[in-house]
Image (cartoon, rainbow over all chains, first blue to last red; front, side):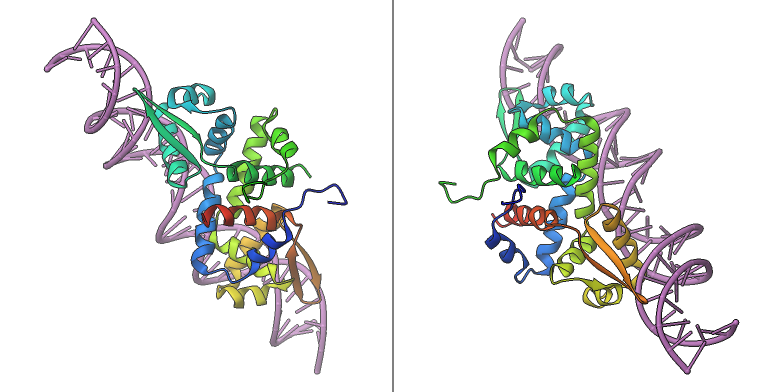
Length: 112
Length: 112
DNA sequence: CGTTCATATGAATATATTATCATATATTTA
DNA sequence: TAAATATATGATAATATATTCATATGAACG
């Protein structure tokens, strides 16, 4: 913190290194793979503004509905976003703060 | 902080949401794509133990040298790892703390 | 300087992934 | 209940990706 850089808590780092199974590594890779697609990242950023239905997301991204729905499913499966139905529409929102923190760290890396 | 969950600094989050260009989103996706492969994640975790040369990494991962070198190149290009030559060997190490913090966040997400 | 050891790289193959198209499902309303 | 609207999903084709094999580069050493 002294040098102005944000630091993740030291205990979390040591926890990180301790006994990670191969399965966990694969799970991790699977999670990051979800972030590793520009359409999905754009959807996540779109939802940073607040919850939206599919049609709104399609308009924001200027993409066809099927493509968006396919990616929404992947994000849902990874529990990065949550959905609820409201009449004909299905409303999507970010599932938790991890999404933002993970992306924030990525953004920091890029910006250096 | 009150609920026991680690939180990334609020200013970083607002910075995150503010005016992100399409190019930056693609860059972000590219970065996460690098984390989204189990071989590369395994290499990163291997380097958590300290710097290692290619042969050591191959032994640790039980993978053929060419496959490892190809992935090392991708990690190097993304500036997640650094390398230096020492005689015949090339020594690899983590480039900075972002790698650990990004992975720590991912791990937290999975563990819930 | 030719051989050995360590690493890198190009080409090829196998596999995974994404977007598109067509269609199915679900909800509302006339 | 038929039509309209919103979303989901299966199949396909185009593209991207990872691993393997063969070979190249580079350093050390006799």
